[in-house]
Amino acid sequence: PALDRREREPFLAAGGTVGDELHLLSRSLDVAIDHPAEPTTRRARRRDWGPVAALDERAFDAFWHFGADELADAIAATPAARFRVVGSEQPWGYAVCGRAGNEGFVQRLAVDPARQGSGVGSALLLDGLRWLRRRGARRALVNTQRGNERALARYRRHGVELEPSGLSGVGFSGRVS
Image (cartoon, rainbow, N blue to C red; front, side, top):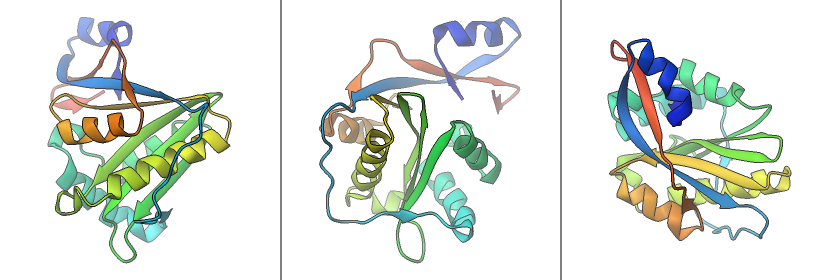
């Protein structure tokens, strides 16, 4: 998981190292959220899990790659979660969003590099934000790697603003904690 400054100190004191720095962003959900008609999202099915893991490997570097276990952990991390994909046969992108109390989280959003720029990421983001709002979340949080300008621009285009503090990925001997 990504950790803020206070959370990462014990990991660093125990010999962990910072693997990557992340932007932390948030968006108020008090206002209505526009949603494009295309591409449409659908509920992920169990048969999507393998292709989603392969897509994740193409979309992220090794430090941040999610396999099936990490995907299951992300879905289980909040009391309520939504796992959506775009693509009828093979997923072109996917998102996991979760809600805990009045806080919402875009826990994972990935788009196949061959489909970037086609609206897949925006459709998944807006679908998740609308779901969070309908479920009573007042604010949504998301993070993205520093240097991922395409994702940062997408989030900002949809009203997601940078927070003053960021997050860090902390690992031990090459493993993310």
